[in-house]
Length: 298
Image (cartoon, rainbow, N blue to C red; front, top):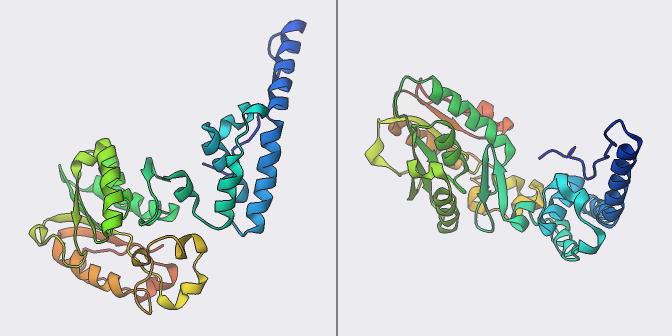
């Protein structure tokens, strides 16, 4: 969903006959006139969100307008004035208070997935898609009929489900410690066709799955990695709404990653790979515990 998606579309009259062209233009004008109220409300909402510090005000104003009115963003121009729903301003107020867009709509988009999210689970971010793409490329290059993957700190299940969906014969074990996040992951796994190849575990990622030691092809994780000292610099959408368990990990942000490296070391088979998301600043502080493992930083 790009910010460049148009709210309105300019129709051009078709056909070579005079009456055909005039009819098409007239219809487009009538349609545009019918949607003038919503266009004006979206413009005002965009200004309000920008003043509130929202990073993508126009995008979010359009997304919320589409959600409230039950249409796609590209169909907003079709909403007539008499169908304008005043609840739009209620959700704009929530977004202006920096409640995440995904919490309001109940959905997050990750690679080719639409995931259910809400309070109690980390909202997946686009940057994690890069790490998952790397892991999928590695899996596709392996000479393994049914690769075995472990997703540690699965949250909503975004990583586990993406791998299961895009690597058709992959078997994925997803591990989550939080009861709330586990519930969201279970919901998403149940709703996905690829979910039949994902096994969800309620467990501590550091000690989980000893039965798989030495058998895993790829270990992947988006763990908490924000230093506690940077709390005040975190965007309100994350700091005030994502679970702290999914965000912060000790003074330097690397407490859990150190434990996960040991987990990956025991889980991986020779020649296996590991990818852990971390900040760009932390990349130089990591070391590889085994030649076959790889940390992927964002």
